[in-house]
Length: 213
Ligand SMILES: C[S@@+](CC[C@H](N)C(=O)[O-])C[C@H]1O[C@@H](n2cnc3c(N)ncnc32)[C@H](O)[C@@H]1O
Image (tube, rainbow, N blue to C red):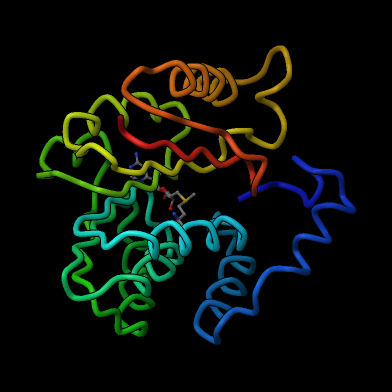
């Protein structure tokens, strides 16, 4: 989720693109209002739209999301999947996960959603791959470790989407806090990793899209 409309793009561009966002159905609109009211950092609508498009292009069998929050992106992705898909997601906060469970059950998704409570770095080693789609949207300083743990569980052609890679515009600057420094390192890594073909898009708060070579 980006901090301000003009954090990455010029305001006029950001507002123009926002107006092009498709209307949300009542459940997603209610979740966006809930997230705004309770300050939950759900994915930006345009990132949701990218997830929707990418998930729809493939017949996915096994999706993993790192960072569930209230289940907004679970529902966005899950709606594009059929009964053949298992969608796993990890959230550390049991209260937030309970909220996600409520929304996900309301969505009546066809796919098999598995919600894991725990720290992502502790849960990931216990998950069995292979995964063919990953959405990383969790602790910014841990993105590199998520990738280390997940790369061996990804099949060739698997897609990895990462949120917040431009971190409010900070990442392109000179210095920054621990999150900024970790994300800068992560971006250099995915851009140069021979295991991946990657791009960072100025979409939302900076969205990485990579495919496993
Ligand atoms: C940016 S939000 C995820 C938003 C969600 N992907 C969406 O778009 O609807 C990140 C979530 O990760 C959770 N979180 C923070 N630290 C975590 C950790 N170490 N392991 C798992 N989840 C964690 C937070 O509680 C938060 O709900």
